[in-house]
Image (cartoon, rainbow, N blue to C red; front, side, top):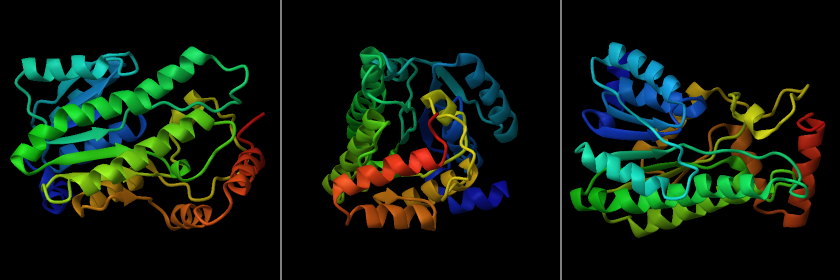
Length: 274
């Protein structure tokens, strides 16, 4: 299985891949699947103990050193400090997977402004700065690229998660614009827009436990497989799952006020809010 994956994902073989937010959820799976494809890994997150556990697992499986960097990427200036750390260690990043992100699921009124600002810092500012700092080297080498994790909610206004949805809309449109700018450079740009993936992300974002199954739900393993396949195929946007693609398609044609109403009603019907 490992050999087959390595052959299929040749772009990662013997290349250095930086995965942010690698301590949980999709980040762990990105690390595992790129490691199986023969990548040299640099994994970054705030939870150093979880990173070290993952590093030991992947190093044992692949026979390669997995470099661990503990960093809180939601702090201002975090991207610059991370790039300084990479330079100090002599690490040249071939592929950047901007997976680190945080959700927020509650009405804006009465919410903590500092937490909202931290969300934007991580989801947008750090992602933008890391991309801007690491892209020039990729362009100079004529290879590599950036895979950004957005969300299917990037396609629509989403009441009760307004800041999160807006931040992911930024990620998607930022990536699409860069994909056009870089089309003749040999550098890849892909925005992953997943639907519901059952990880610890939802609980951390403030969702209550829904009683109903979520349409379009996909596992982290399947979501990452789809993302890496789209990235290798130089697709600018990847929306895994037929139901998720259909939802994003139809939301683009409806009046945005109606889309906001549908989004809010769907969240309530699914039991995602108390």
